[in-house]
Length: 225
Length: 96
Image 1 (cartoon, rainbow over the protein chains, first blue to last red):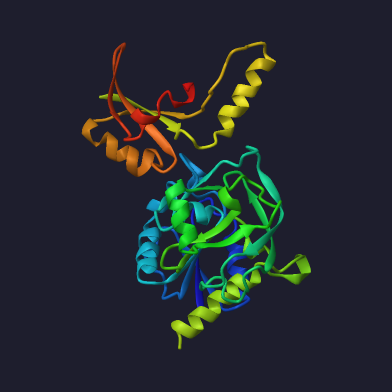
Image 2 (image 1 turned 90 degrees about the vertical axis):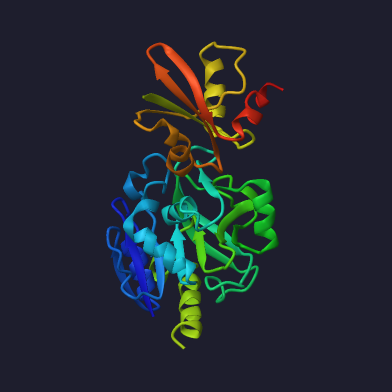
């Protein structure tokens, strides 16, 4: 399968994301001004500080030419994974519910966190089992997940929360310990932790790998079959 | 037309910036300060002021987490010309 990793001015994790994707398939970089998604089977919006995060994190990047194509790709059922700043971009673009607010501590946090898989019923977590723990690093200042109460209730009812911070691990004040949510059709997923930094046993825990493996399994079963 | 957009966190959403400022003031000897919130001020000259609410909804604010008030500035005169739907309901909520 072929992944496409978007590069905005200010992205900084796109190379790690590409390397992580290359553990399970091919991966190309998609330039923010291009409208050609190069026939990729899945898109990754990586971490960083797209367009300087001016105004609000992710607020300007959503207007990049490539994002129009990514939105169309998502509407047609294509897999889109947003990591950290990519999660913020997808929320600002309305492709995912909710918003990311400044951490309760107002500080940049950078550490390993333990996540719990809430649902394996998604293209991004199907290689996991509910209750599995994934050890993945976070590094952000604006990672406090928020959704209004009625929207939050809908998310829970539709089982759109795929990952939570394990008890006592919530680093940023996210509501209900939410670390990652998907859209209603379950083909767009965003999370604040960085799975692409947790795929190489040489560098530590490999809790991020099942997310990329899940995506490959989904594409092989539903797209390439 | 000279306009300014006042953006504030929606009432009920935790505002750690406001809390940090509120905690810092007593350290300088200022007492009796409560319900501090920190927002953002955007100033702009516009030819089509009727577009300001849409600008606010689509870019200048995130309607999920922020409320806004649009003011027209003419010399020393300031007049409110638009606001997000929930602003009227939530202003002064902290005072209770």
